[in-house]
Length: 148
Image 1 (cartoon, helix red, strand yellow):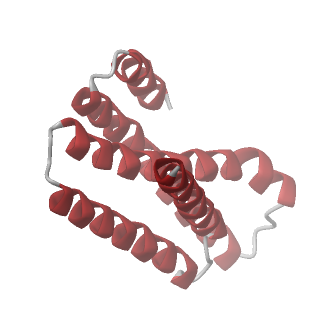
Image 2: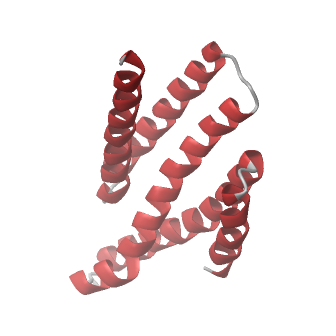
């Protein structure tokens, strides 16, 4: 978890000072340790179920869910950040659309994979759905603003 905190410490000023490629790098550095944590927790929980060890709901909500939600939000933010890097580097509109389409495909495949696991991970799928709807609403708002 200290790697996540260290990367977060780098991301905050990079994002605040609009160093977009650097902030994307730090976001990736936040993402990787969280991926390892969530993967290890998933494996441990499956081993406990296979060995008939009782897993209390409070264990999930206090020990696993916070990491799942943090990982899920960072995934969505990282994908968004990569799209912003394209804009920041002056990519053409066609390139930006391609980056956005690939981003949505990656998130959709990630959510689908999480739901297809032996023990589905609903947190990631819910966060991806929420982030997608929120982005659509924000874009619709910007389009409506431009039409005025």
